[in-house]
Length: 536
Ligand code: NA7
Image (cartoon, rainbow, N blue to C red; front, side):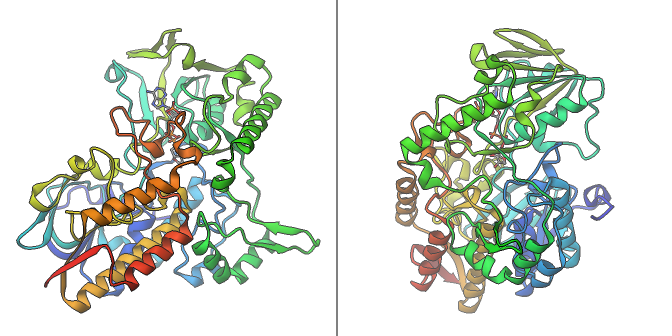
């Protein structure tokens, strides 16, 4: 990993005024790959990254216990075949530091950092109707003019701080799991409180409990969680994967969730596989009977691991189906409730009323803490975009356009915002898939589209209301009947975690393979549903 911190190194830099072909927002897995592809086209670029370093999700989410829920040999770039052979992940499902190290290595290996300014947040992107160009501004006073704007802003990068009265009055340390400081948080001898028991909460709680004097967990909704199948990488199986990487990648691209499910027969005659991560089996989960038996399985699992039956009951979800929220992958989570220094506050018995200078007040009483951890998730999928002042044709803002739910054809282009590409935007498989597979597909699509536009001298690519509407209907249609859209379901996929956000199911559940085929067909049909116009 690079030892210097780019953002602080650039702290005193002079604001830039640049005219480029493409502005890329974000130096996560998507932004880095975009730079790699676009640079090979000979395009002039500027990448802009809010963090001090590359990594995106894996830069920001450095809370203790953070880990990927997809097998890591699958959660890796496919574009560099030499790297595939050279790199080795120590565990089957990597922890954050290993993934961050890998992403940094890719940035170094392909010399990607030099295209970025770091520690710099995009504040606005305004489309100039006359010039057909984007005017992009940052909080460092930079001004960029670009033909294409590629939003590699991630799906889970806008942290959610719930609007709890008194939140600003807390005098201890307050930290969000998605903004965990690089220098860490001192928990020794501290009374720590954590709000939220989604993936971030469930992954961090065992670590927080081990480090703190006391941990108080404020749980609004219990989650379904499965034990993580994390083991040291088996060199024989890794060798098999490396020999078969092209096949593995093909399998990923045609699969439902971007995971190959590759297996082979090991030296002991047993079939070895990668496991499926936490995401598989959407269709099976839609069967109500099967779902009920899975709920029972989870209830039994919790009861077998938690000593106190009352606490176990509080940790068992009962009022929504398995698969509504993202299934969490955990390590030692339930056993943590057997520790003497852990208290569970079941907010269903009386919710949080306020945050005070010294702690959290609930209808059940007050809890004093020195450190308050917000594991309260993100304004998912739309937040990273609507928090930027994005204005398209006629000055219309994206936030206004999306007030009733996001609209983007194929999750890639939103009508009225020409030449702006959304990498893994709402309406694409994105968060319901192995993100790297979906990122590569989108960046490849954009690379091909820009190549096509340059070859044809096309000025703008937009879409139509009709194309966008029928895609939204399709996204909705394939989600009906799945646990994702059950009336009892409240998830970030539906925007239900954010006060006032319109309830719309945002990702595309139709499958990675089917989605890719649709995109390919659209291109073969002369960019059906898109509007390519004007000359440059
Ligand atoms: P999640 O999955 O959105 O979880 C957030 C948690 O915070 C969840 O338990 C929420 O309860 C809870 N929450 C949110 N607001 C409040 C308030 N106001 N009071 C109490 N509790 C609250 O975010 P994560 O960061 O854990 O995971 C996001 C994704 O990142 C994950 O799915 C993986 O894909 C990686 P709720 O369930 O809404 O009642």
